[in-house]
Length: 177
View 1 (cartoon, rainbow, N blue to C red):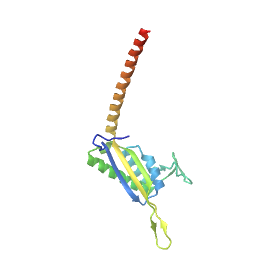
View 2 (cartoon, helix red, strand yellow):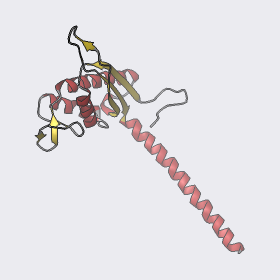
View 3 (tube, rainbow, N blue to C red):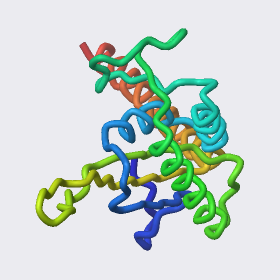
View 4 (cartoon, rainbow, N blue to C red):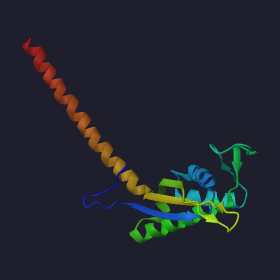
């Protein structure tokens, strides 16, 4: 899904990332999975509901010994992860506004949580602390719909042209025999 123009700059896309956050990577992965490919308005509403314990984040992969919540199965309320993802969504909306995009029509097209470095802390009895890298990319929905219409109309023209030419050539071949 490339959105580059001839000069190599991406159109209708805004990005943001956060490095070395002191948050569980597994919790961030589950939160990201829950809101990926949704609009930023829905994502912010969902994360605020998780922070107030009215809605739980479904845990699909990292769900060993996790209690079930009504209507979703295994789930939790990962407070720190939701706060960091919510902060990242605010950053990407600010970047989109700076680029001139409509912030009410943004769809999350990429949302990743990766493991960061594990620095050791303490002096005598050292232990590692958790770190997570988060990355988000949003695209304007109106731009998505316009691009899809252009692609579908151009593919329809090609489809309509090809059968007409093949029918004429088969008729001409049939008449000569």
